[in-house]
Length: 144
Image 1 (cartoon, rainbow, N blue to C red):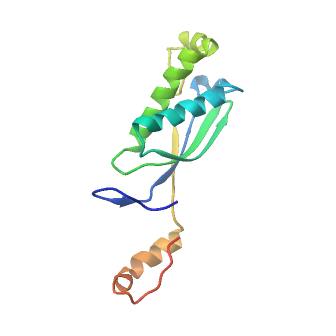
Image 2 (cartoon, rainbow, N blue to C red):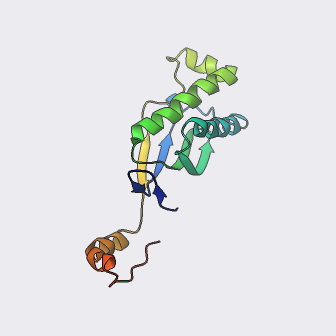
Image 3 (cartoon, one colour):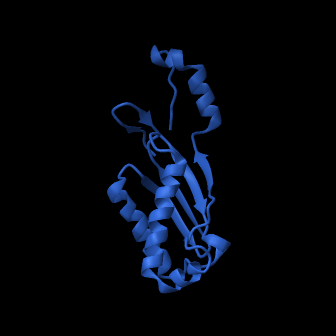
């Protein structure tokens, strides 16, 4: 992944996010998974800074590796993805609407898992340790 630039910051942030349907029902079956991918892509129309690096939709959970600028919190981005896709799934698929009508309405469970995806720890330590020499052109460090 490349470093991204905005007016006030330079960033390289990736997050692995996993969330599940409420009660871990296996609703993300053939057809539903493709529609969910379409709806995730549509989010980028309104939030073009959110970039999907990788996605994997299983019948009972969703994995995404996503990159977005630090002006957004992880909770905000997860909320955007879950809110928009949950509403769309209920509107498109009657069996999902009926299943969750009896359980409070929302498709997605309230929680989620998130982990950062970063550079090698040793590489970062060396970068910090030798930053002054790097700035002066005295060290040749390769950041991948």
